[in-house]
Length: 162
Image 1 (cartoon, rainbow, N blue to C red):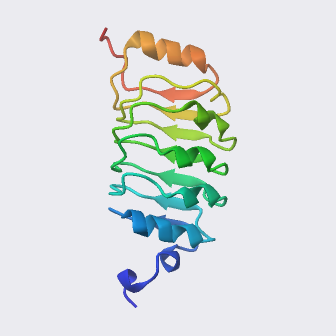
Image 2 (image 1 turned 90 degrees about the vertical axis):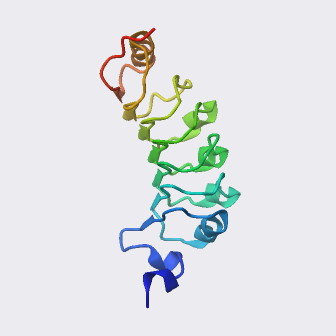
């Protein structure tokens, strides 16, 4: 049977990973019944929002929304309490809501090439925040590092912009 003829749940590999390109909202809704899904890559996803049923995906640990067409942060992510790794790289998202701090298992936050310039409070449980490919002034970088001194935070080379 060809890969495209399999249901989305049947396309999840033995490690619980699924990679979709340019997924529609309807395809995303179909994922909510996939009990074995632990890692979901939705690069270049065309759906402008994520379905509410994503909040019930307790087994999902890794969510990659790189290059997805998301004009704002998908608030359903703040209810995905098992999430350990979240990538918003190369999206037009400009701000993170305070509720991101409510994700107790979140350890890695990938914000490369986003418009995000500041972080909400309460993210001290993270291990890594990646801000590379983003122009952030040296002063703002220092403020972010002071806000979270125990987190590994990656910036592109120090920006000497104002």
